[in-house]
Every structure is written in structure tokens, then in C-alpha cells.
Amino acid sequence: MDPSELFYTSLSAFTTRHLLVFGSIFILFRLSRQILWPYVFSPLRVIPGPPIIHPILGQFPTLLHGVCGFLKRSWSSRYGSVVRFVGPFGVERVMFLSPQALHKILVSDWQEYPKPDFVRNILGVSAGWGLLTETGDVHRQMRRNLNPAFSITSLAERERHNSSFLLRCTFHLAETDMYYEPTYGLVEILNEGIEAEPTPSLGKVFYTYEWLSKATLDIICLAAFGYRTDALHNPDNELADAYHNLVNTQSLLNLAIFSFFMSIPGVVLMMKSKWMTAHLYLLKKITLLAPIATLFESVDRIKRISAEMLREKMSDTDVAASDADSKRDILSRLVRMRMSNAGKGDQLSDETMMEQVITFLGAGHETTATGLAWTLWLLASHPDIQAKLRAEVGHMVEHNPRPDFRTLKQMEYLDSVVMESLRIMPPVPMTLRRCAKDDYIDNVWIPKGTMLYIAIRVVNTFKEVWGDDAEQFRPERWAELPKKYNPTFSLLSFLAGPHSCIGRTMAIAEMKAVLSILITNFEFEPAYVGQIIRPTAAITMKPADNLPLRIRLVRQAPS
Ligand code: HEM
Image 1 (cartoon, rainbow, N blue to C red):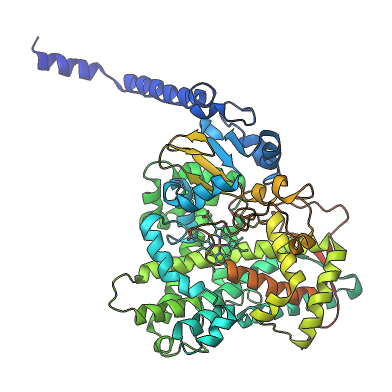
Image 2 (image 1 turned 135 degrees about the vertical axis):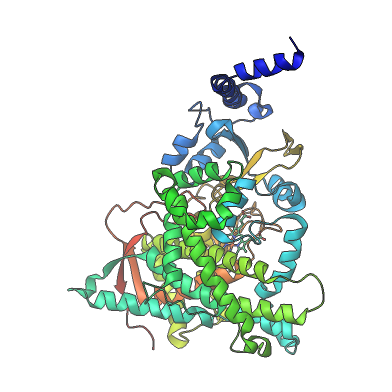
């Protein structure tokens, strides 16, 4: 027989059935190798860590049911400052806790430890393709362009250089007045709710997180866009509604499904397409994928509204004209900076600016709401600390109902309460990095591709640094920090290094401003005896039950 004839005959004998058999064998081989990998082949086997409790899901079932960060904390006390654990499908993660290792991963060699692709994809689709997703030189340049809009120049410097345009416009971010309109709006709503109760002196239970989330959305929209959402009074506000839906999709299970879904080749491109946006209802029909459809729908709405705001800002000639009083939002400042840098080459494009601003909304709204909610919980469960804080801030707010940045900075106990709350209940409890090359970290050999788990909550409460009472809420510790405290690596709530939070100063000032007004006006208590909190173990550690708290009036709000 002619060889080509032989080839075609054998090809036609190769039926779909054969293809299925070979395909299944290949998948089984890959899967078994993947599952056997952490037990038999992995060079990371030598690192101490918990035993694998499920052959396919690894530690995932325990993590799913445990309290966010608690299990990792117990592993760190048991196995030390380098721990290896296994996630679904044999994917290993290594957790490093020592300042030296964290310095290498986050600061000195940060370019070798980028965010894993699936994390970038999740952040990109939910909070914009900007600072949070870029790395390397592109990130460095973006950050250089954006830093001036966030930096807080010291008062002394401002006084010395008060003729400089840049210093005048950067300091505005520290001027806290844009935080107070929504905060007093919230005070009014809580007041009215309590007064409308049959016995106002007993106070009323509110879903605290829900209200704080509306207030912080109003604040970030004012600060980022100069735009009034008024989510506090307007439940139908489209942006607030979109964020509400987006935030409600957060859970560890959804995060795992989302990560898996986004890691399927081609899915990211497909999800970015207009066709998919128009056909999200198809995903909604599949129960497991329905939250993903909701997430994409919400992000699409957020992008449409943000694009509209950006267009308005670009066509607003006043933005360029005034660097002073009225246009102090981040976007106006970016537009002005771009105009003053015209022709210099490395400017932000329209699209990049829009993605950045979506990033600011996403990264700056839920995180701050979560931080405030947990602070109120900690104060509710420590009435003595709450009373001490009220004594400090109440006196000041009585004389000055809108304390500025400098006044807030001077209140030491307020500062200690906020830092202590961010320490034990960090709104972002963890993040991930991936090794881009083989390397030694803390004298442990880590092969290229290994996933590194940056355990923010565990580092913040590491007993070796913070002492035996590391897990307790004790603001007084900030007046005398432990000897082993390292200013960069003992508190990772805003991370460290080139990817550390650009909004740190703003977030702390905002938390202090909101907290000082709320604590002056209200007393916070657990909603019921024996209340148990439920922090979500997802991108942020928001309270899964929206944190019901009983709120009572202290006295009338200062006029
Ligand atoms: C209490 C409030 C906040 C907390 C706890 C927080 C925490 C963090 C953390 C842990 C990261 C690092 C994430 C990673 O690399 O894996 C981060 C990055 C970031 N945050 Fe925040 N954040 C807060 C508020 C804000 C605010 C108010 C803004 C903006 C208005 C903001 C904007 C950003 C941006 C743009 C990044 C990316 C920075 C980069 O990679 O260069 N954050 N934040």
C-alpha cells in the first residue's frame, strides 16, 4: 500500500472515541501528577507546614470554614516563620513572616515577586487596570505620575513654600473638610433612626457596615471626582447600587471559583469583550457562575458612570483654571498635572486616568468602610476604651466640629485606637505574590512559579514581635512599642515597598475624622449578648453580616 494511503487509512480509523480516550488519559496523567506533586515531587516538601487534609482540595475545606487568618496564625505558632501549605489541585503556597524575607519580597527584589496573574485579573476586572495590576517599569512610571496627588506635605514645609503650586495642591488632600459632609449626614440618619424608636434611650440596632459603606462611598466620590453620590440619602444611586452588588459577591468560595474561572485560557479576553457584557445573563443561568456575572455587570455600570464623570471633568475648563479652593478632588488634580506637564512625554492617557480613578474608588471605599466597622466593633466590645476615646475627641469636637488634619494628628489616643484596630483587624487580611525566578528566601530554596502568601493579619499579630497579648485590642501599646517592632514590617496593613498603599495617609485621616464625630455623638454596643463577629476571608475582610451594633445617643450633634 502507498504510504500516504496507509496514513489516511489509519487517520480515519482514529475516531472521536480514540480522541476522548487519549484526552482523558492525558488529563488523568496531568491531574494525578498535580495531586501527587506536593506529596512526592515538590522541593517545597521539606518546609514545615500542616498535613494535607484533602487529596484534591488541600487545606481549602478548613480555610473555608475557619475564621480569616486564625488558622495561619496557629500554623505560624506551630511551625515557625516559614510555613508551607497546599491549596486546591496541589498548588502550594509558602508563608514568610520574618522582616528579612518580607523586605526581599516586597522591597528590595519586588520586581521578582509580582502579583500572580489570576490575582491581577481579579483585581483588574473588579477594580480597574491601574496601579493595582501593573508592575515593573510601567508601575513605577504610573506611581511617579500619581504620587503628587496623594502626598501630604508637612505643615512646616507648606509654610516655608506656600507659593508653590504643587505644595498647595498636594496639601489639600490632607484638609479633611470633604470627609465631614457625609459624616454629618450619617450622624443625622442615625439620630433620626434612634429618635423614631418607641424608647429612644435604648438606642437602635443598625447594620453598621452598610451605613459606613455608603458614607465612605460618598467621601471617596467627593475626594476622587468632586462628585456627590449622596448614597446615604439616595438608595437608588446607581454607583452606590453597583458597589453594593459588587461587594456582596465577596466570599472565599466565590473568590476560589472566580480564580479558577479566570485562569482558564482565553476567559479574561472573553470577559473583556463587548459580546460577553451583553450576554452576561447566560452566566447567570449557571448557579456557580452567577456571582461572577453580577460582578461583571456591576463593574460595567461603575465604568460607565466613571467615564461620564471623567468626560465632564475633561471638558470643565474651571478645572484647569483653579488649583485652589473649589476643584480639589484627585481627578481634577490629575487633569491639572497633565496640563502642566503637556509635551513632556510620560503623561497619563484618558483611558489610564479613568482606570486609575476606578482603582481609587474600588481600593479606597470598601477598605476604609471595613476599617471603620471593625474599629466600632472593637470599641463596642471595650466600653472602657470607648469612654477614654470619647473623653479625648469629645472635648475637641465640641470646640471644633470639623477638625482639620493637624488637629486630628495631635489626638494621640485617637491615633492609637485607629492603628491598633488596623493592626488586629486589617481590612486587607492577606495578599499573594509569585516568584518570577528560582531564589533563596530566608535560606530556603524557592523555585520559580511558587506562590507566596503575604499573611498581613498574621504578621500584625505575630507574638514574637507583639508579645503574648498580640491578639488583644490594647491601644495603649502604641504609646510604648515593643522592642522588636519594625516600623515597616511589623504592621503590614498597608503593605510595604513600591506596591504599598498609595492612599494610606488619606485612609487614616478619613478614619480619624469619621470616628471622632461618631464617637462624640453616639455610644456603640454589641447588638446582642454573646455577639460573634464574622469577618469575610476574601479580598477585604468586611463583616459578612454587615455588623449589627446597638447605637445610643450621647447627646445632640454639635451644630
Ligand atoms: C483602611 C484603608 C485601606 C487599607 C487597609 C488599604 C490597604 C492596601 C493594601 C494592603 C495594598 C497592597 C495590595 C497588594 O499589593 O497586594 C493597597 C494598595 C493600594 N491601595 Fe490601599 N488601602 C486602604 C485605603 C486606600 C485608599 C483610601 C486608596 C485611594 C484613594 C487606596 C488605594 C490603593 C492603591 C491605588 C493601591 C495599589 C498601590 C500600588 O500597587 O502601587 N487604598 N492598599
